[in-house]
Image (tube, rainbow, N blue to C red):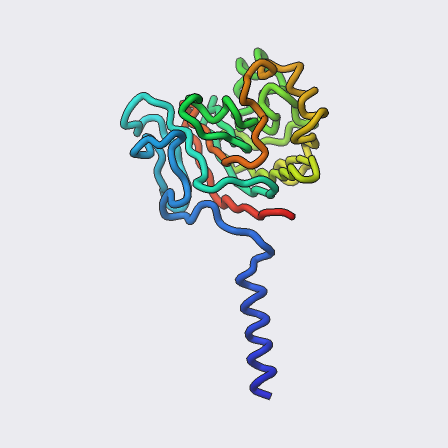
Length: 229
């Protein structure tokens, strides 16, 4: 009887610890697992406040860009993240980033899912939906606008499957993007964008995930990843 009880407890423990394959990318306490792109010594505006990962340009230690990337590369994955942007704020999340000193910013190689205060009227009127929250920045607009206002939390679930050439984004529970991530279809998307002549853009399949310093205060929480395949 005790044997079966131990088996049951073991099964429950394994079920809870496996968490369906999800792992934390942010521990709520510090920036373990992340570093500033191309290896700056400090986090230059990034900090953790009450379990939230915050970038605040007012706390910069120098003027250099401080976008951060994961220490680990990812190819096929789902990424869950909550974000909150400041008024008239602009930021983003990158995938398939290549880190190399021949590049200055993650956006030179990694496509970006835009984060924006969609109530920033002047920006939206000038740039259009292709730079709204939930877009692949300057590549694909979201199918619908579902963002919460500046100062409120939004949620992304980003699916990138290089092996099966499938990407999608759920934004506050709505599927707003479906797209290829490599091959002819992806290259055709890039060919009609400002990135078409960028040598390294969108080429890496197994790359880093990045969070953008775009000069606005932004917060992130509940950052989790689940590797596929």
